Image (cartoon, rainbow, N blue to C red; front, side):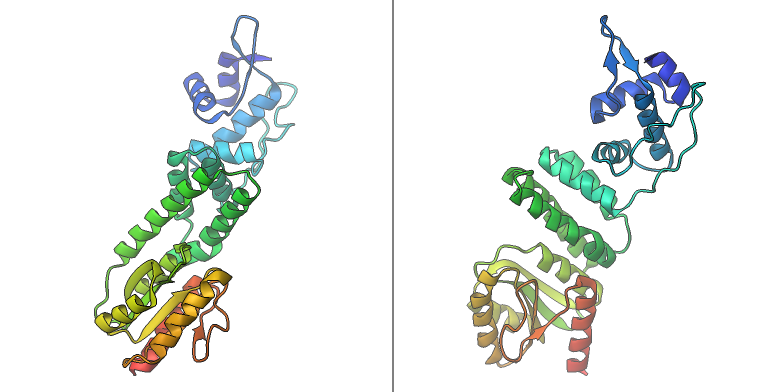
Length: 302
């Protein structure tokens, strides 16, 4: 067993950092002597060494600690030689699975700062479209599954979903309007509330150069007609996330089929297939679906 002073000497991590990591992130968890002093065994030293290497590689301390706690990056049990000299060992680079685990753990703890930090990390993995398809959508699916299993409370699921909504809304605003692009309307039909996918798609469509009017959730059929008229839309995209959304989505499609502008009606979402005659189904990839819509509108305008 080693005192905190000796642990700091062996790992190269200052005593103040060891105390801060333990207090803020629960890594490492030292034993205590009868007098209350911290004592570190070799496994704890391996955890500290791994934590330090992750931080040195550019991870935030919170992300490094979450990776270690979740088992995504495990401290090697034989990371120390008999002479107390640390052995070199390879640590995986941060990636999507680490940030997903971080996001889910923060949601379960109702840790709003952790949710935002994990989103900062996740949205730094690449372009918006790549992030949404390869990281955000699978992470949101895992969030729903965690709620269904009782691992994440409704409050945590809602807090995490609203944080994602804020992030997507900011990305939509940052994409800016393109008044010269083809005008399209995107939203969800009456009664539908699962709008994160539709908002992500609207953002990707804006980024592709389309002039997007985003309506959000629970939009009555008559309001779709108003939006198409006022926006002079050549296309609309209905998000159909669940089977229960289909009847109201069909009502919108049938109403717009007789609209004087005759917009191209498209659907996206898990329940959007074979919605109605003449309705086009966009692909499951949000990035590619936005490109598909851009091509459809360009051909129509041309």
